[in-house]
Image 1 (cartoon, rainbow, N blue to C red):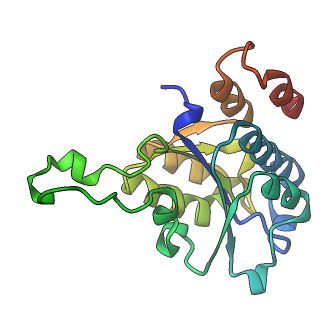
Image 2: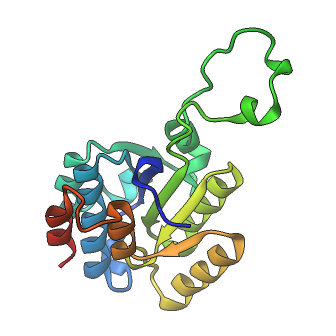
Length: 203
């Protein structure tokens, strides 16, 4: 199964000023988060950014701020480690549109269908991989989204914790991808009208 740009939404988790200096490979991780945000802006993929306890951990790092703004990303402040506990699912999947007649008469799959059913693939990356990223991704999976974790845009304070998160996510059914995988799957062809622009972001 390949990512479909028309079915995708991007979630960037907790790239914050007082957190990132402690992350493994933080410079490369932030650079890939910037690429993801810029690709979302170019390809009109809805984007969301979370910030954990911002009074303690600070705002999103400056290096990512401009790209997030260009993507018109919605910001979600949170105290729970999982952003789903703070309303992320409702942001990604608006309430069902009113239906005519008795809703009980509808087939179950129609009762549960999201209003924006074309955006059920969540491309997610962030920190720390074994805490906020993992808990958010697993909760999204539980909420019946297809979840794609961008491994080279994720980190933790130790490689052991980061890698343990990836192992657990893969075992749960999350797709593990890289920034370049996302780019080329969103475009699908060298004839894509924004190919050169996206290619320039990942070179």
